[in-house]
Length: 138
Image 1 (tube, rainbow, N blue to C red):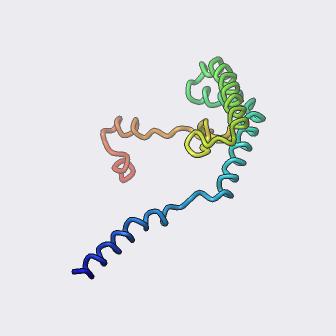
Image 2: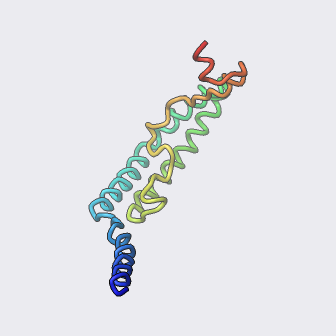
């Protein structure tokens, strides 16, 4: 009886202490690296925010047609101010692990990302009444 009680207590002690030892602490090197990436991303976004004007102009013309020639530059000016503001915020608050855990505050994180057209296959499937995988088979 004493052996069973001792074995139960030992098993309970192991079960309760294993999760504590298995929890991985964030290494200081990783934290410093993420801080440096956030600072670099912020400074880069401030420096390259002006590229939003031609980017938004091109994307809006591609998506909207001729109306994009008017809307695109206006959207680009707004995105330039927004990306510049977010860049300043990331550069100033690079020590703070927000949002998420040093995640980008804007999507896409850099101005040179996000130039690809959005692919929507649902319109093609709804026109023919078939699934996209069925259309490829024909």
